[in-house]
Image: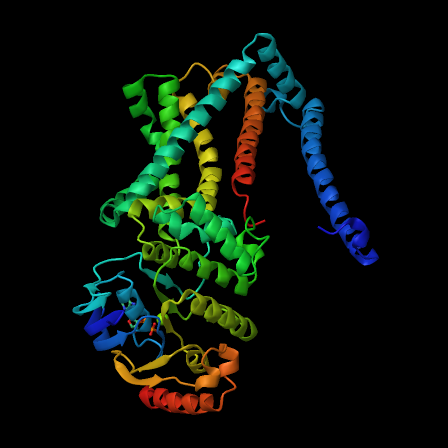
Length: 269
Length: 257
Ligand SMILES: Nc1ncnc2c1ncn2[C@@H]1O[C@H](COP(=O)(O)OP(=O)(O)O)[C@@H](O)[C@H]1O
Ligand SMILES: [Mg+2]
């Protein structure tokens, strides 16, 4: 709030030290990434590692460019991102609705509790064949996989957030004669926004996992498909290109949630 | 007619481990516009009593009668201020102050204007659009009071309303609250563990026994004509203040044993 001029010399020095430190960290992070790729390229070029099984960045790049030239790059990326976002949206919305139902009736929540715990620890990949039989290979089964992978965690985290709201806030609402629905919309939901966002951060990653697994098991498009396909024809450059793109996609999706968080949580800063 | 009659009220809490009798045969009558302070050892059932009056729970036995009719649930005639302000951190100060009206579906342009005026009157102008974390403890407590007063209750229940504040702020907010409540001519029941606070604000101080809580004694507070309309701080200077203090202190201490 103060203008810069208002600060003392020591304070300005202190601020500058912090800025320099942050910039150094960023530069080193970028350098680290570049060196890993450079080392990989050099090691492959000098034959320290076997190019045939490790590929190298320049060939991965070529593989990506080839995909682009054949007009397939956007299709694969689009499928993976679309399926993830769809799975994530459906999973989050359904998860929140289920968590709300569990909050509404403690009795039902007690009944279902052990089953939710068990479902959480079942590896969702085991459900893949079932989805494929039910929904056929392709988009529907992949989205179902993404939902299955992310929804349980959303239910557990959000329900826990709902339960942990200060009972005095609810008491306050009751002193005004609030109905249960009013308590839910005016206290439980807004008080749980931070919890819901931290659930989103986890579930966006899990949805991506589900999508890739779904694409592994049965699909004709998407990064997961590219990875499996590249592996089968022993085209490691294609596999590496797809894996690198996958990392970028996951970073982007996570960043989207962070943006959303900044937009929604205006108070408290 | 008495504003509030509490007749033979008792309350038991049931938990898996135990059965706790919080109140037993509790009797009290409160006159209109009276300011009652209730003091008692901690855990003697003071908060329980307020929750019963507010209609948040039903007594195990006995009845509570407000303006001639028994209390069966929460009513808009009663305002309840809890031990802490419990302002919602995601709402602005104005929206926090409007919470009660909103829940009761009584939020109109008129009532909003009224609340804005109250915020101004009680030294919160310019903070309407701030968030709670930007306010001091004393200011937050005033917002909580406005939130309660906005719904225009005629019986106010205050549960240790200043206990979260430091001593200085507590005295200052006590002054404010007393002035505001006198202005509005409300009937007030205030629970506190601060004997001095109880005496300085109330017309009558009720001392409770330890659990199960019952009325142990009553002290009508009368500082004489010169202090009748003075502020709590002023009343603390009265010579009678110390007498009341000593008497109530002794009773509280003997009940602890
Ligand atoms: N929900 C509850 N369940 C069980 N026991 C309770 C509950 N609330 C309060 N009690 C018990 O009842 C007694 C009175 O509580 P309370 O009215 O909060 O006392 P005070 O406000 O005077 O400190 C205490 O011993 C407390 O432990
Ligand atoms: Mg209490």
